[in-house]
Amino acid sequence: MSQYAAWLSVQPRPPRTGVAYVAVRVGVYLIGLVLMVLVYGTKQRGLIIAPPIALIGGAGTWYLLGDTPLDPRRRLVNALLTGLLLGELTWAVGYWDVAALVGGAGLWLAFYVLSGVVEHGASQSLDRRIAAEYALVALIGSVVIVAVARPWSA
Image (cartoon, rainbow, N blue to C red; front, side, top):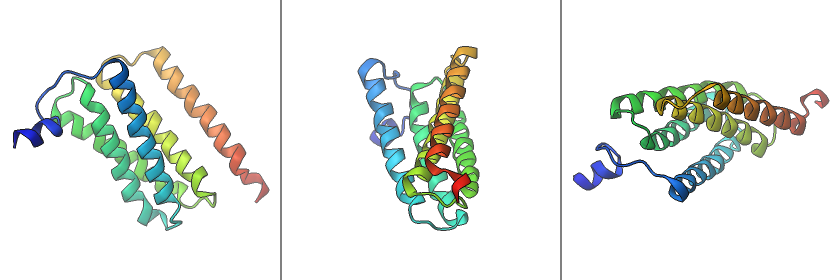
């Protein structure tokens, strides 16, 4: 039982730092991107694809929050709320007729920004500069996605 508790990070452990910190984030975000593109690529209605995207985003956020000082209950609540927001966004994006990679990348961008803001908030390191960086990433990513999708040409 203690192995599962340690794996689920129910008991506190020292947060990752350095290369391990970066490697975990790259891995979580790559897995999230692949899964979101695959789910979005099914071209099912928003009601069908929103729950898996919400689950992917919530699980990814929950895992990333393991490096913050949040207690387990607040960690779960933050991850669930992030997943809920991604699910709601998925429902809207699900009606957009774009390539799977474009739709999945848009959902991944939302996951990246939401989970990053939540993680910095949980670590009490969210300041004006970090919020501006995430806002800029969201803006540039959105412009690129819209430019690739070219909704005005349909």
